[in-house]
Amino acid sequence: MMEAMALDADDRRLIVATQGGLPLAPRPYHVLAAQLGLAAEEVMARLQRLLDTGVIRRIGAVPNHYALGYSANGMSVWDVPDARIDALGEAVGRLPFVTHCYHRPRALPLWPYNLFAMVHGKSRDEVEAEVGQIAALLGAECRAHDVLYSSRILKKTGLRIGG
Image (cartoon, rainbow, N blue to C red):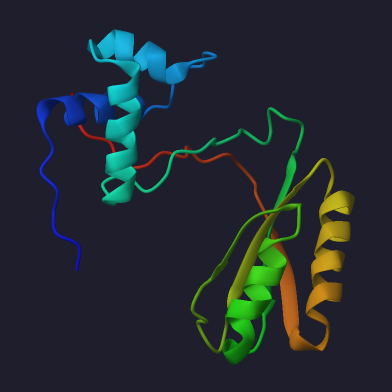
């Protein structure tokens, strides 16, 4: 079990300053440093330490697929053998059009699916073609699949702490 890390005031200010996203600037860590009265190198070192200790899990882009023209967003769900799910999930996750892929428990008898892969397209036909590629990759390992299309955008945010 990981030991809890004590956060100092600067760690907390940095977390609060970044939880809504990094500044949209060529050098976002320098912008944060100026806002917080710290050196850019210290901001980067603190963020790396917070990542290394698990206080924050990742720093990454969260695109709005709709704004980029990808209005057909489908969660493909697959029924594959549990004994093969790690290898199959890794193969599906490497496909360039799969944005995330993960294992979820089945809810039998109504929900037989255990492998989930999100795909985005500019049309449902494009998504269906991508799902066809996943089906071809899985081959006989796939017993059933479906696609669940997004009907609205949900706000994607993580845990927030007050400033």
